Image (cartoon, rainbow, N blue to C red; front, side):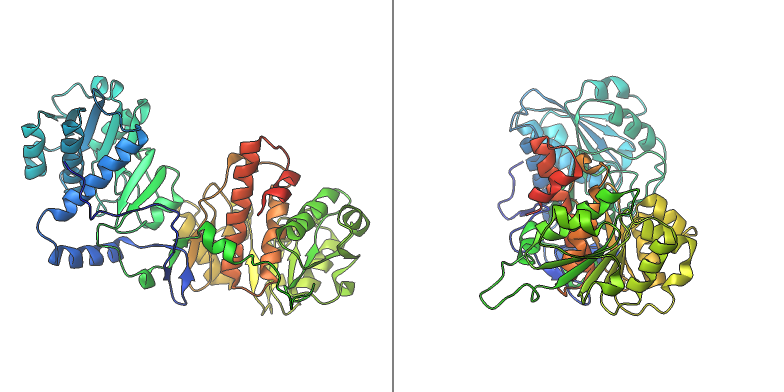
Length: 495
C-alpha cells in the first residue's frame, strides 16, 4: 500500500499550535468522540469511498516503519481485527506491511463481519487470515515482532468482551511492538477510564484529533495524531496539551522599559522548622524561572535570604509588602501559626496557589475558603485530592478534576504521571512532559514556586498552572538525561 501523499501526521508537539475553547485556550486541541464523529461525517461526505481508511492505513504503516527503523522484511506482524472500521484500518495497514516484506497474520474475532475489502486485499498479497477460535493465538503472539490492535473503535466502551479481552491479555505479555489503531482497545476515549483488560500500546495512531482519554491514560504510549482531513474545528475543544513554543512565549525576556516590579512580584509562604528546605526549594523555583522580584514570608526567612540574596524576606505575609500572586503551603506545617499565615494569604485580592500542607489545612477546615473571591489554584496529589474531595471518584481523573474545579471555583492541578489541570468553566489541560526522575523529595516545592512566578505575571491561572507543570516536566526530563539527582537540580533546567 502506497502511503497517500495527502496524509498529514501531527505529532504531539507542533510548530504553530491552533487555539481552542471558550474562551480560547492555546495549545494542541483534544476533542471528544462526538466532536470527532461530527468531523468524520463531514469528511466522508466530501471524500471518495474508502479514501479515509486508506489514509489511516498509511499513517499506521508509517508509525510501524518509524518504530522499526524501516526494517520490516521478514518481521512477523500480527493484526488483531474486530468487526468495525478499526479492523479495516488494521487490515489495510497489513496489506502495506506485507508488500514491504513483512509476514502478516490477521486474527479475526468475527470472520463473517471482518472488513471485506481489507480482508480481500490482505489475501491477495499473501497475508494469512485466521479465526481466533481455531488459531494457536498464544504461539502466534509470542513470536510476533509487531502487534496492531484493531479490535474495537470509538463507539465501544469498556470492559472488553471475549474473545477480545483474552487477545489483549496475551498481546500485553509478548515482547512485540504494540501499535493501537485510534485508541487502545479497552480504553474509554473521552475519560481515559479502563475497566478490565486494556491494550498496552507503545504507539497509538489516532485520527482527527487527540481524544482526552489518550492524553490521560498510561496505556496509549506515544500518541501520533493524524488529521486525515477530518480534524474538528479547534474552537470546539475544551481539553488540550501545551507546546514548548507556546510556553516559551510566556517567558519573554524583560524589555528596556521593564524594572523589577513590572514582571510581577510573587510572594511565597513555605517552610518550617521541620522542613526548612521546602522554603529554599520553592523560592528557587520562582527565582530561577524568570527575572523580577520574589518576596518570602515565613519562619525560614534567614535561610532563604542566605540561599537567595536577591529575595526580600519577612517573617509573616502581613509584613511582606505588596505582591501580585501568593504561593502558600510547601513544607509550611499545619500548626496554628501555619493556619494563621494561610488565612492571611487567602484574604489577599490577587491569585493564590495552595500546595502541600496548605491543602492539608483546607481538607481539615474547608470553611477557610469561604469568602475567597480572588483566583485560586489548588495543587493536590491523589492522596490530598481524596482528602479534599472524598466524594469524587479518581478512577476518572479528568472528570474528578473538572468536578472539583467546578465545586470550588478554583483551578485544580491534579498531580500524577499525567497531571490534569482543570478550570471551573470546564477547560482543561493534560500535561505530557515529565520523567520518573521527578519522584523525589522537594520536587513539588519547586513546581509551586514556578507556578507562582507565572501567576504573578497576570496570565490566566489555568494557563499559568499548566505552563508551570510543562516546564517542571521538561526540567525533570533534562535532569534524568544528565543523571542529576535531587530537586535542587531542577532549578538550572527550567528554561
